[in-house]
Amino acid sequence: MFKIVTKKVLSEVNKLMEIEAPLVARKAQPGQFIILRVRENGERIPLTIADSDKEKGTITIIFQEVGKTTKELGTLEVGEYLSDFVGPLGRPMELPTAPGRVVAVGGGVGIAPIYPKVKAFHDAGMEVVSIIGARTADLLILEDEMRAVSKELHICTDDGTKGHHGFVSDILQKMLDDKSQKIDEIIAVGPLPMMRVIANQTRPYGVKTLVSLNPIMVDGTGMCGCCRVSVGGETKFSCVDGPVFDAHEVDFDELTRRSRTYLDEEKIALEKFEHDCRCGGGK
Image 1: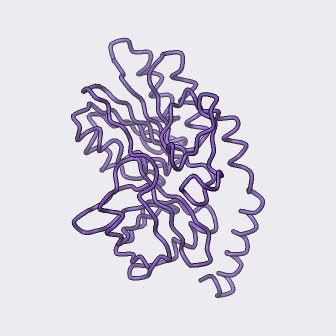
Image 2 (image 1 turned 180 degrees about the horizontal axis):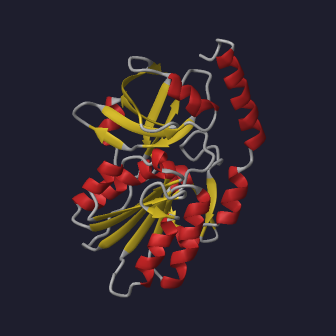
C-alpha cells in the first residue's frame, strides 16, 4: 500500500499528489513514469513522474480528471492509500551531450510531464525556452515552477484569458521563422493533436523534435503489446522503448486510431462511476 502524503488542487480538473514510495523515488529519473491502481481490482493507469524526492521517499504525480479511474483517484485524500504504485518504468530521457538551446512545449496536463524534463535540461546547463498552454487560464498548471527553470516562459490560452490568445504552435512558429534564434532541440508533451501539429511544423526546418507518448498501456513491461506505436516504420513499445520518441518518425495516424479503441467502454465506466457516486457507493 502506498500512502498519499500531499494533495493539492491545481485547477478544477487537475490535481497533484505526493505518494510515499521510497523504492521508486530512489531510482526515478526524468522522462520515466509509474503505473498505479487505486484499488486492488481497479484499472492500471500510467502517469508521468512529475517530480521525486529521494530523501523524503516520495513521488509527485499530476493528473487530470477525465475518466473513471482519474476521477476516482481524485476522491482520495491525504492519509489514504493506493493499492499499487509500480515504477520507475520507461527509459530515462537522454540529455544533449553539449550545451545548447532547447524549446520545451507543454499543452494542458502535458505541462506536468514536461516539467521534470525542463528541470533536467536546466540543471545540465542548457538554455531553455518554454511554451505552455491550456484552454483557459484556470487550467494552467506549474507556471511558477516552469518559470524557475526556463530562461524564457511563454504562456498561451485558447480563449485569451492569459498570455497569447492562441496556440503554443503560434509562438513556436515565430521562433522557427526567426533566423537569429538557433534551436538545437524541441520537446513537446501534450494532447496527441498538439504533438502531431508540432511534429509537422518542425519537420521542414530539420530541427530535432521529441515527443513523450502516453498510449493505451496495461502492464508497462512490454509483455502485453497494448502500447505499441510505429516509429520510423518499426514497431516500438512505449513502455520499454519510450516514452520519448523522435516526433518526425511517429505514425500519428495509427497512434490516434489506437487511442480511440476503448472510447465506448471508457464512457460506460465513467457513467457508472458517477452514478454510483451520486448514490453513495463511489468508493
